[in-house]
Length: 176
Length: 83
Image 1: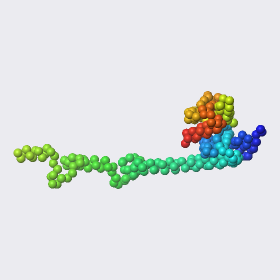
Image 2: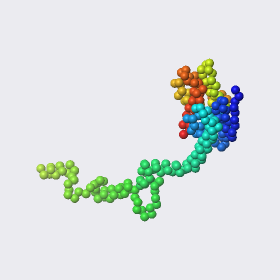
Image 3: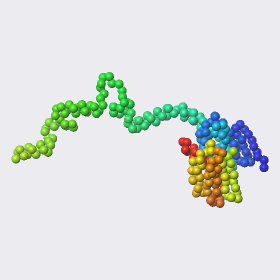
Image 4: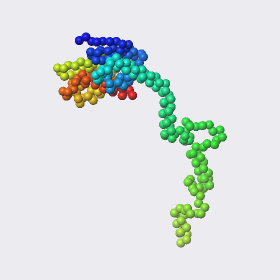
């Protein structure tokens, strides 16, 4: 039985064998774009790749069901190629923006963006010396308190209620 | 073009993958995943091609369809590995 072979643009159809052969210039379309285009049609066709990855990629498309034009199948594949090639170009162009958005969202979630922990990343100029890191400020207060004979964490006790166990028992012994 | 040839007498189908497009890892993984429904043999790479022999375990499985499904499955694995 002679093979009914028909060529339209980059599409060859083999009606008797029941498949279409699409020729793809690998300088126009990257291999991952060809994979993606084939993958998007997997539910409709059986896909097989061959040829030379550096020059010409041959994609064999065999429809799963009966009916439907083989040429139309090839054209659908060409459209998918263009779609994924465009997606790849825009994806490359927007790479930095996407990275910035993800980075910003991660910073927001971990609470690092607004924290004033004295880290060099969030440091801003302070010519008047107003801002102080929390640890530094508390240490200075602690130093002043120690100078007055108070321990760190001391709370004022004007009524004299707060007494240690030793102090209370010394007083009791004196009373006895 | 890639070869898919069926040997009806032996009840097997032979595929020949272009190693420039299909990695051996993906083919072997597909072979493992298909091992429940058929016997799979993956040959060594020769002249840039990797040969695979599929022998269906059940009588109802058509070798040609099995081969085409195997090709699609390998492509799916490759695509999933990329993304």
